[in-house]
Length: 391
Image (cartoon, rainbow, N blue to C red; front, side, top):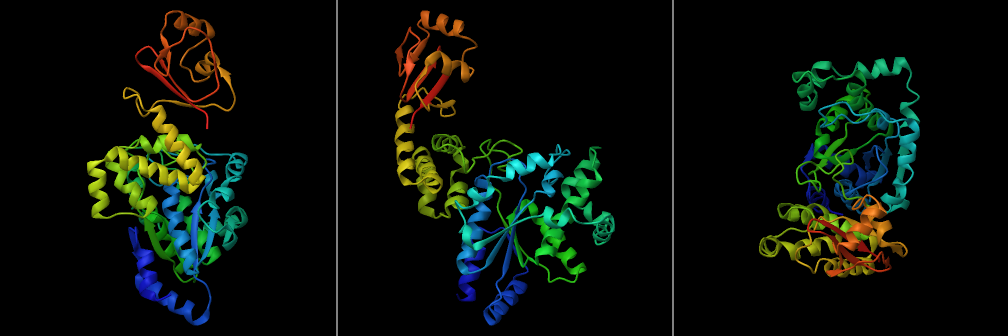
C-alpha cells in the first residue's frame, strides 16, 4: 500500500500521531525488509468488560491489521493490581491477582468481535514484570526523574489538593513503558489520556537502547453520563457483552449532543449531511446509531428485532427512555419480577398495589398477580416504570 494511503488511514479519527518522520522510516524499512511493524495496545482487566471506549482504539488496530501490521495486545494482569492512575483524583482500590485473572478470562472472546483474532499476539505483562528483581526495578526507576513525573496534570493536582500519591502509582507509567521495551513496540495505540504515558515510554525505550515507539492516540468517547470519558471505573460504559436490548437502550439514553461523536468515533462516519440529519431528527438519528452499533456486536437479525421491540415498548409517549429494563428468560409471576427489580419491596406491597388498581400493564389496569411470558410495559402509579423484554 502506498505511504499516502497508509497515512490517511492512520490519521483518520486520530488526535495525536508523532513523530510522523519516524513512522515513515519504519514503514519504508518494512517495505524493504518485510519485517512487520509491531503495534502495541494495552488493557488492564480491572473489570471483565471491554466497552465502546475501547472499541475506538480497537477499530484503529483493525485498520492497521488490514494494512499488514502486527498487533500485540498486552493484557495488564500485573499492572491491573496497581491500577492506572491516569485521570484519577484519588488512589484506586487495589485488586487481588485472583480478581484480575477472573476479569481477564473473557477478554480474548471480546477482542474477537473487532480484531482478526488469528492475526494478533496476546501477552500478559506478568510474564516479564513479575520477574523483575529489586535491582531491575531500581534500574528502571533510574531512567526517569521525579520532577518530570510530577509534570503529569493528575499527579500535580493530587499534590496541590493534599491527596495522597503513593509510590506504586508513580511506578505504574514506568511498568507500562517497560512493556514496550520488552516487546519492542514500534507504535503504541490508545486513548488521548495516555499521551503522557506514551511519551514517557519513548524516553524509557531510548534509555534501554531501543528504537522509540511512535505515539498514536484516539479521542476519548464520553460515557452515558454525558460528562466523563467512558470507563469501567465510572460505570458509564456500554459493554461489548451487554445484552442487545440493554445496549440499544443505553445508546438511546445518550445526550443529543453526543450523537455525532458516536457516529464519528464508533462508526467512522461524519459529513455535513449527517450533521444536518442529526440536528433535524436527533431521535431518528440516535435510533439508527443504536441499530448499527448493536449490529456490530450481535448481528443484523438481532439488531433489527431489538429496534422493533424498543419502538414497540416506547410507543407510549409518557415512558422515559432511561426506564429500567428486565430481560425475561422464562415466564415469571409479575410480583417476582417487581421484587427482583426493586419496584416493590414485598409480595404484600404488590398485592396492595394490585388491589388499589395502581398497576398497569401496557396501559391496562391489572388486579391479579399474573404470569408474564412476553414483552410488556409496566407502570406503577405515576412515577415507577419497568420494561419487561423477551427477545
